[in-house]
Image 1 (cartoon, rainbow, N blue to C red):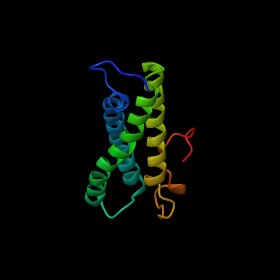
Image 2 (image 1 turned 135 degrees about the vertical axis):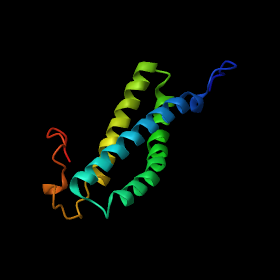
Image 3 (image 1 turned 90 degrees about the vertical axis):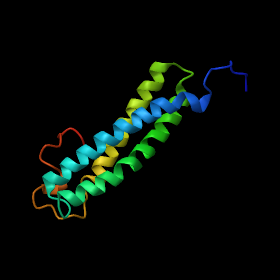
Length: 128
């Protein structure tokens, strides 16, 4: 491995900021969409219980999404910032879709309001 200049961030230092940013955005969007899906499909015992569940879920999603985004950004930052940012955005979007379709639309829950446990506002072009 080569020497790095004094003051320049190393592999881990490059990805911390983008990892925190992408993880936070993924967490906020995922929790908001999951809450909206649960409300539309009448999932859970009430809005207060769902809110507490989502409140505890938010930091877990932040860490689970931010860590791979930060590592990916740190690894790809040498190729160029644009490449690293594009890869981070794509990873954050796919992680958000995965969480929303996995946690927001449970298959084992009876769906009195949502046929197939898919909310009526869910875009048709996105698989659920």
